[in-house]
Length: 329
Image (cartoon, rainbow, N blue to C red; front, side, top):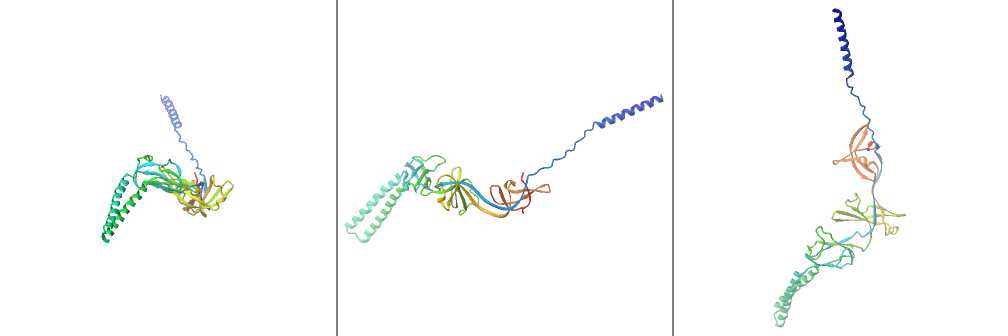
């Protein structure tokens, strides 16, 4: 009996040991992952020269125009041209109904005739000098009123202000037609001044920064080249878009053809020995302008103030001193 008890104890001991080993083998081991080091594409903030330039295409054209306005209000009686069309200064473009003024002229004509008759009667009857002087004064007043009304009839005619091409103003509601109501001072259209051609560069919606009167330009047309300056900037607005026309005066116009496109390079401004970085390195988020620096392998944001720029680079006015490693990606 004692021997049996010892055997049973040994068996239990072996079983317990076996269970413990099985339990240990079923534990899940959590793997430890090694993070991959981030690779940055970088460049160095250089101290160098930079020039702000714009590359545009220009051609000879007519940048100037004059507005054609109504000098009186009313309704259109006739439109004398089919636009767009070439016109000469003084050509009749449009007329307005002037019935009311013509009625006033008829009434004033009656009063003027009465005033003249009164003066003639006083002279014939030997009236006093005072009576005649007063009647002649009344006659002058009536004559001035009559002449003013007759002259005002011309306000109901609309003429071309200069030689050129006339184009009617495109209204949002409708085109101008017979019986269209108009107001005094409203624009009927524009006549381009074709008395002289100018070299023009047109830029839509946004003006070229720092380009002003006197800005130097370089002009290239195939094998021909010249220099010049900006002599005028003409702004116009036409419904959905606006246009800035830069009028260029070449230093030697004979060096260029008066037909075909001309490459125009605006030399706006140059800075020597200044801090320059690629424009793609600059971030602009919620009104904050900054670059990312790489310092001892760590990315650090640095606020900067920008200056002039060219096609690829931008000047840093403050925030960098040169030599910093700049993250591009």
